[in-house]
Image 1 (cartoon, rainbow, N blue to C red):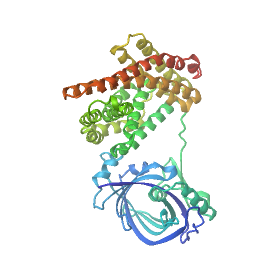
Image 2 (tube, helix red, strand yellow):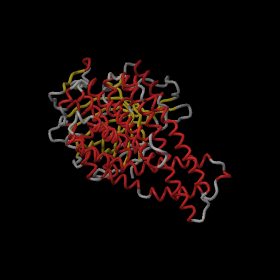
Image 3 (cartoon, rainbow, N blue to C red):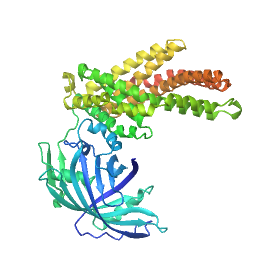
Length: 521
């Protein structure tokens, strides 16, 4: 069974034989406890084209030390040295639990041993006055060798400072200050694997390796790819959302908070970009991918929508006086939620394991590798991106005008929901244009988001009313009082009307001419 821990560490470059500076002067550190030396042997696995390494993910089988087994490290914030480390017991092959967490990266490719690292590690514990562990400091002598026959061998020394579980990250800053005063500097490398691979990798036409300030530390410089044309900006947007999709995949499988919602947002932003930039991207390529993204968002939505609805109804019930809770209201809601959620978790994971989902990821990769750009992609972003945003705005304006012209009722509710979708698309167009247009596009996106929120709150009330009616019927058929459900229905109906009254004012603010003219229209 896999276990997860949050790893927060910093790495430093040191010379062989370096002694650890005295850290007892660090505020909060009362002592440094020598824990001895251990020999570690780790074999890192990856695909032949190193897909995991490209995503700053490491998968290793380690023997020796107190944590022998399989370790999968997933980046959380590389800049801050934060990663989630998932452990699984020692075995000859990659555990199934870890294979699932890298499925979106690996897909149908085979994992195989890539690199072997031998480490002689001298460990010290930084402890407080009560002897509680604050951080672990390791001086490592590393030997790296590629697993391929004739692989190059390299070696180096480094120092790691890893925060204890639930430790205060500010301690790392204090230790860092002490180490810098002693002449020890932060490493250029995010991991041992990254260092070993990049310093032994053959060069191609897009990279070059130099020694940093004559220290012998290799630095890889990539060619500049700053967006220039409209096509460049659109592709950057697509690449960012594709990367978000891939990064969120293991989080959804691990059932981390808000992960399903964020993954769904990434799919929507991709679809929105395909629709907004039809003048820039060939629809014959993007439309089929857009349909698959729509399928994925719908599958993810089953779990997410139920979660949001249950939270809303629970809050409503919690706000009522106890005297108005007639019958087993909370129990009825739990039964209803469990019945609707049964198997949804397994279904979500099954979707992420499906060939259809993996084929979608392949399609996105193929599109970005060989973009289906139309002639308009060469135009300056100040023209094409503004035009796309304003077109989405006009679409929203038409839908809001139509919705506000309808009498209250189901038809108006449907029209307002359609307007919500248009507001979201206009907002995303503004977000996509922000890197090129700056503050005006950011302001435009903010105004569209304000309208989207009013419309979203209205739609939530519509969905809640449907659920409350179903709950009232179930309670009645079970011989329970339906009073509380009717009361909550009335509250949601009032909330929906409040949002409808707010909409004209919110739209008037968002549709002011100066918001659009600032874009350069």
